Amino acid sequence: MLFKQQAQLRQKLLVLGSLAIGSVLYLVARVGTLERLQPVCHVEHRLVPGPEQIPLRSLQFKRALLHELRRGNGTKEQLGLQRLVQQLPQAIIIGVRKGGTRALLEMLNLHPAVVKASQEIHFFDNDKNYARGVEWYRSKMPLSFPHQITIEKSPAYFITDEVPERIFKMNSSIKLLIIVREPTTRAVSDYTQVLEGKERKNKTYYKFEKLAIDPSTFEVNTKYKAVRTSIYTKHLERWLKFFPVEQFHIVDGDRLITDPLSELTLVEHFLNLPPRISPFNLYFNATRGFYCLRFNIVFSKCLAGSKGRIHPEVDSSVLTKLQRFFHPFNQKFYQITGRTFTWP
Ligand code: A3P
Image (cartoon, rainbow, N blue to C red; front, side):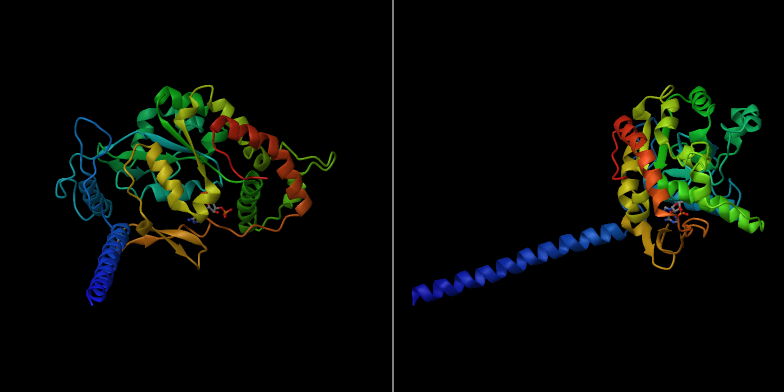
């Protein structure tokens, strides 16, 4: 009898114990979900140490005010934004064209401590702009608070000879972001963009195969710009004459398409920013076939239709030839950067 009562008691305790553990697990999961779904910074994290630190939550709030200012819904004074400044960029996305530079810039701009220059400024690669001086460059920068980071992107920087030295002269400790894609795909994407431009002007254009392969040797045509741009290591070597490899962060453009958050978290770390871009900020849009951006519960956007074009079909033997051609350059790129890709 006593044994039976004890066994019943043990069973009851077991059930109660499981219920308690289940509830705790449920609550942990729920809190986790809520945390991921928070539209604004719910915990006050502080930015990189500095004399005057602003909590991220207030930066988020002030960003909203900045938006109002841009829309002409008040003056700087009315909105209490007297401390706004135009800062030179502390980080630049230097390339690579068609690597996903626009997506990277827009996605980083989701971070409350990041402000993007919307247009490509082309300061360092364009002699005429460069001659206008650094204050001209600053005047092209968006308004920001002193503790925010300004970022610009001009993919032509990566492949233009004069640029590394010019950027070095402006700020030798600047952070440099390079977003790359599998080189053959990038070359086809590059071609597709030019092709679309020609078609818009009702012009005919060569097929990719004709441009990428030298008709006299049947070898890869290294004079073709779309091919040259994809030899990442050649360009990077020029940059390394001025900047140590630690000042670069390589972003995987193919992964930014399929799993943007993991790439963005790495960039946040590289920029010394607290991780603030969350799953809430990125959602997959099946119609677009890409991730789109959610800034808050009311404002979200996808990239323009010119991002994510359908590529023309290319002869598979040409693709293979290109992949073989890029292979040794890719190996060298992995070796220099310490970031390995599964490119063929
Ligand atoms: P494709 O048009 O070849 O697909 P860039 O901004 O440097 O010109 O790069 C354009 C590329 O960004 C596009 O190349 C597209 O694949 C890629 N991309 C990455 N994330 C994207 C996103 N969320 N929306 C649209 N395009 C994105």
